Image (cartoon, rainbow, N blue to C red; front, side, top):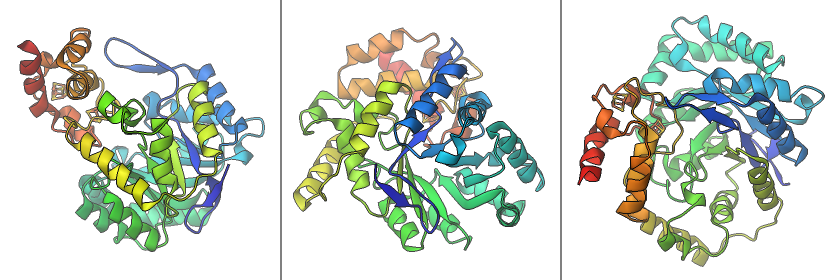
Length: 369
Ligand code: SF4
Ligand code: SF4
């Protein structure tokens, strides 16, 4: 599998393993429990299949993802990978919390250093916390001490905020951005990605399949895409030399095998006609995007029991398929949008900045007719 250098840092395979969608059981309240043995086996399977980039984070799988990664990386696996994890900015109340949480992560991951360390899901408010608590200086100290090798951030906010963060620190080594052929004008935007690369940052991609949506396109899009929609989506990203690693949150061995087979191919550079085809497919998607929920589950559990991503999935299906397909899903939810009291707790954690409390009454009314 092709390896690319991440900025001026280490090299890794163009396909990375994201540890946020590993095998787990979800109860009626939307709480997820990681199936630890299966997760460890899956991570090792990915590494044995050639993947050298492993991406996890403090909160994934109720704070158990890092534990699974730490266990999977025993027996010589740690030396075979570039390991990335993220600082949970929302848990930092004092400056010293940064280093104590890093210590906790190193312990869970059973390692003495993190190869790529990110400030997790920065946006306006979290960036202000970073500045208020002098976290950038703490990062530099930890880098000098060798506990962190490369400094970066992942990002979910608007373009102006992206440039504030990009230009607000001169020691970024890399950044992790949501990008796919649908999201070129969203969050950092594609131009923001190019500008970050021009400043020397390595580029890691998240949500290449938009929470799986691009892997299972509606019929009208399917008919336009030549062949495998996953290959179609990955190829657009790998075609860009600015992109180092494309993360995929794989949840079973079949997905790993499928994605690895794609990454092992050699692709010709996309032609202007092929790039125009992506634009045409995006234009169709743009007419169907009711709610940009990626089903990341960050907002769950809702304190009032609403199955938020489930309600959005049912609603979105009505655009790509039909109302009865959406209604079947909606009727199967334990508590649908009618349970929403508008507290907006979910909106504070939603990386896509979805106004959930505004959508819920609309969805409830739509399905009540
Ligand atoms: S706004 Fe509605 S869906 Fe969101 S947490 Fe509050 S009750 Fe739940
Ligand atoms: S509403 Fe937001 S936080 Fe909740 S699953 Fe969708 S994208 Fe994730």
